[in-house]
Image 1 (cartoon, one colour):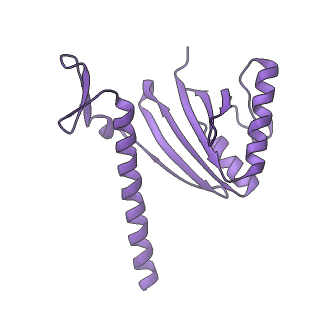
Image 2: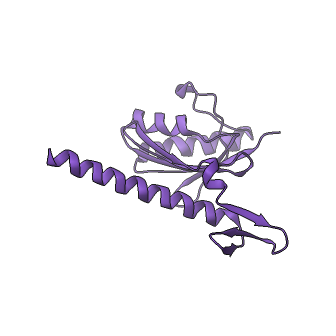
Length: 162
C-alpha cells in the first residue's frame, strides 16, 4: 500500500488548466488514476480536483515534479507545485518557469527541529507547543524559501556590480 503524496499545482496558463480539466473528466469516467500519456511519465494522478485557485491531486510515494516541469516547458508558462508526503518526510515546493525549475524542500535536519511530546499531546518546535506538524513544516519551508530568495537577490546584486 503506497504512502500518498498531496500535490497542489498552480499555474498562470489556461492551457495547463485545460489539461487538468481533461484529467478530471477522464478520472470521472474511469474511476482510476490518470496520467498524461504524452509526458512519457509513469506518474499517475489520483483524486484530481480544482480547489478554486490550485489543482489538488495525490500521487503514490513522491511528488509529481516531472509532471509540473514538463507542463511548464511544453506550454511555456509558470507552474508551481507544493507537495507533502508525511510518511516519508517529504515536503517542498517546485517553481518552474518555461521548464526551468527551482526546488526547495525540507531535509531530515529540518524534521529534526521539532518532535511530538506524548505527555503534552502536541508538537514542540522552538520551545512552543503546536497542535499539528503541518503548520511547522509550512513555517520551515517558508523560512527556506525566504533564505533562498535573499541569497538569490544578493547574488544578483553582486553580478550586476561587476
